[in-house]
Length: 594
Image (cartoon, rainbow, N blue to C red):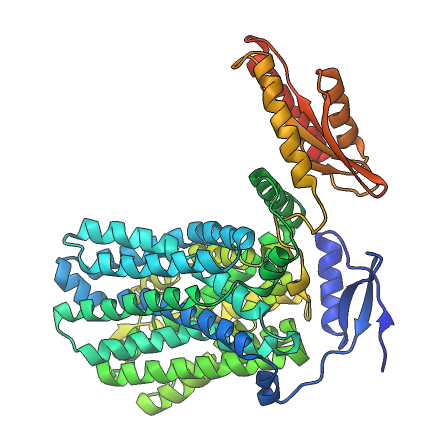
């Protein structure tokens, strides 16, 4: 069938959306939401883009595009190297600090738990001020914290530094993938997403190679940490010399200016109110995915050493080859997802990994385990290769740094006990190992757990949304007025008059706040203190309050047929102060509900 065809509108609500997602999965064409020049939106079925030669896709990137992508990938590799520099040297660190390996793993847990906080902070910073300087600060501080880890004299200092490290590590993913993908051509994003996600696997391989290179002496862990510090600082320094992403440069060039600080947080709150279903769905999906990778990877080396009887060198070589399969799989499946679809690619890869479970855990010997491990991780990380672009397309366009970073890191936090769960279950059951002796049942435990996770991923993805081909790079920036929109000047003028009004009524006795009313027929409703668009009940209440409490128009501006007006709300009195505050909060809540 040629030509675009009309499609039903995007369903609203959890059950209708799930039903529509299920039927769309069996419809080869893409459901695309189109916005015309008049601002009207409608849906249509479009043919997926033809599968192009990957080399021709790479050729579409300009030199600057490649620089953005390379720096984003390098930052993600450095971040993964930083993390694995600890996890692969647990034995050395336990000897150095005189602690058990379980105590050392506490540092890993703290890192995972605090990553979501860093993802929120640096992600929102990247959405408000641009990708450049939040990433620069992030990478430089990560490098300095690696150096601080080297000079931690006590185990308590070590844990404190690694906790801070988790905060800053969490901020890398969102800004790195947003910067890398928003500067790529639309039809190349599937391929580049697959390459980008495998930066994590590359970081592991490089850290493992560095660990093998420095030898097994107790103090050699410091050398690996010095390398990690150098990589992080280098990534930050390189980012200094690259310009800001295109949409931020164009916003500045077009004369767009920032709204008052509270407006950005108001937009953030409204995004969470409007998009909470997407947030919850993405967290659930990322929880499954993080369990998927941790369960199939983290204990595989231990499985080969114990149940399969391999020595350390054999297990290390097999692990590195396994990660090589991950890098290849992520790239290939990410590339195919541009044509096949994000959800179909994830589901097919997950099912293939489920089929390979028996072949993954039953073979004996280094060669066979290396080959089956390669193909298992080909499909595990193949599914993962779709995630960067899938999350970016699902994100609210103005929050493509914070949304993927936070949902990914919260999923990571929830899945943080995965390795411990596998270890506890495996060590409570024994099977006959390669040496003929009873050994912990790592193979069966990982196999059963992976099968459960695969089905969870398949079901979640089947009923989840997909927005393949979304052109998010043209979206407006959060917290920024469009060019020619001087509402910021109106608010600044109103704020100055409000302060004068407060002083006239006695400092400490008057509480003044602003309500901004934009009359018209748009449907946004917000708090009395927010930027309220629309002529709905909430805004009528806002105007009524402004009038009855003595508020007067302070400044206004006409925008076509609409009028943007800032009013003051104030009241006097000591005893009524707290009561009034509670009343105002209640009214704000009622208007949000309305």
